[in-house]
Image 1 (tube, rainbow, N blue to C red):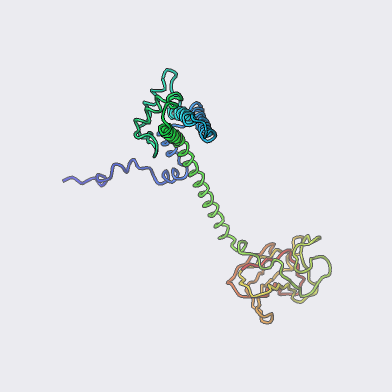
Image 2 (tube, helix red, strand yellow):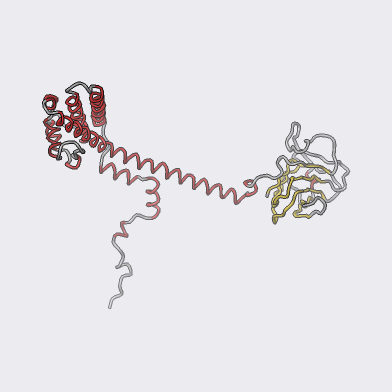
Length: 340
């Protein structure tokens, strides 16, 4: 008794199935879909495009002739012949490179797919009659028809022209659709990548994304030095190179206090120390909050020297936020940012 091969029951098609990464790439880039569409219906060359333009111009002239000459007895015959010429150029364009010089018009009509020969309501009766009309018609032939027969001929050949030009445009429209899918899916991929990057930024430094509570909010000091600095509520002002405020030199416990104007959720404070000197004056530094401007709660403390201190803590509800030095000193900071 031999041991069975664990892979013997595997579907052979699994080996030919592209991997997930390849399928995802194809979903975005659409390279195989474009190649498949080009094989099914190769893009029209310059000559085929020229033939299609001739067909469209002839159809436009036919429409003008029919609508501009309603009192001319032969206007139906004129329009019919122009539509027949238009349908001929459209049929030639469907051959992509056009017929060879030795191929006559009858051969072009004989080669036309039967599915494209659908007479409209009020036109000739059958596809064979429409093919015969396109093959043998001429202005002289149409002019000898009765009024009803001329109308049926015009309707039939006008519809044939529209059908052939729509078929000619089908390949280009399919390619445009696939390319549009590529653009939109690549745009979606770009947005997903951008969203992921923004998510990483949010995770690393979320308070920058949540809005700054201290912007434009009034602040006051325990004392003032009288030289340099800004006026509340500014933190950036002309001449402010190292700090935006400076308390008195002999303050027993200098502080700066921000009024957030209403109760706010506070969880992060970022402090930039004075930039030109004297960092040691700002430590030990405590962050305090209050709801009523009477009872204060310390939520963070810094004892080591710093140039920038960003501290997060359990969110609290507060209207006032105060930074206070826990020793006799002078307090001067470059910026203070408060975040929810």
